[in-house]
Length: 616
Image 1: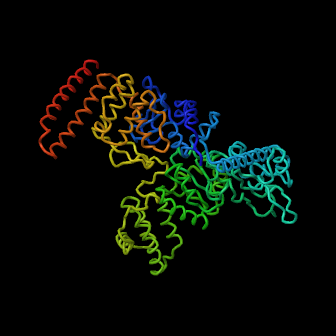
Image 2: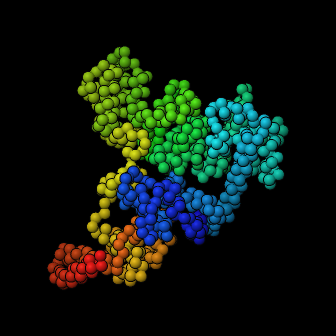
Image 3: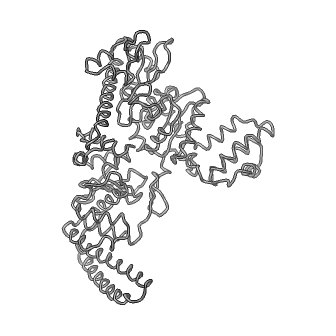
């Protein structure tokens, strides 16, 4: 796949107002000449530790260590990859992206795909117009209204209607310059078995566009309007653009809401998604009538780490939940189950109980492990010892994944009560032949150790202690004194570029800095000190995060030349200390000379520090 040029990337970067972009996620206030700060959008906190450098368009949180440039910010908040972030921003600001030189065959495939996407987008617009303007679509409008779906929500999902005539899309597309081959390739038309003539595939149906996360229409799900019309649901078949099982319905509408909420709600049908959106649960996506696939789980994981399953309470829905648990364990997703009354789907619940009722059901979501235990108990036979033994054998592997704690104790009480056993006996029976009970292996997918939280807050860290994480899988490690000195020095170089340029020439990246990542930052800053956010590699988030950290620190530090001098001398002092240690290991020859040099540097540090105090 061809890449976009660096010039294209920089045009997008220049066009974005970073303060406006971030302000859509969290309230910012100016805290310096080149710094804004606010509550971190990536973890829960009460005291602001999140800052941005609006000029360099970089952000850093000193609490959870989330860092990056404007593209990384869009990736994290919109649930897309780098290319998706670049394309989203380019679309938003009307910038034409230019590609690097690409293979002619690849270029032709790309242009062909763009043509098909254009055709699908035009057809989607046509279907929408028919739904709202055509007398023929009156019955479809009545059906949708009867499902409790309002016009605003339907328009948000671009729902439309395909008229009954056999050639409306065919003729309109031909007039627009599209070929029969393109109509056939998108699945909008099919050929007659009798005479091979092409005709519209979708007729007299409500049309639900199936889009990617950028909102580009890839195909359609179509619901029949006549009782004898088969099949009831007709979906676009796999083709060059649409691949069944790779996307989630409504992902383009839900992704930003899911990222902000820290959770995503998964249901089955198109109308379920729209109804929950209308009820205020805009972080909802749908399965589009397919069995959950690894690709769809991967898309869920990009949105949020907590997934609420609002699937029908029938056997098919429960089997879908079990499959979801298996796939989610690989993505470290926390699964929770929204309780739905038997025979009721989310759209029915919204109609019956309103927005408040469905919100209450979502708030009552239970960890997936509770669902699996209760499912075994519900379908098991506790009337005989043999039946209870079967139930215990099914429960053993479930309990083997539950860490010791309140959740495990509560579920033991539930099982003991159902089987009429003492809790101690139950625990012993469940542990028998189950390996190491309480292992924490895959329990994340079952919501273990989460305390039953349904709002995603419990998955987010707010500290910076070693060994914790920020809730998105990023380790949060406290910097040691050496690392803090190195970063402070570099951030002061950015804050004082005139003095910083001279200071950077006096340090040796290999001698004064002790990690490869920071050494690379030194070399980058030597040529980008006045604009550190430019020319960052798109495939190296750790490096981009470090540069973001330094740039945001630069707006936070008290920037005085004397302070920069102190930090530079501290680097030299640390370098000499390392040389002394090496000399002691290899022999005593150099130690005395190094000790003299260390004393000189230490005296210079003290003198420079005195100047800092005088200027304070």
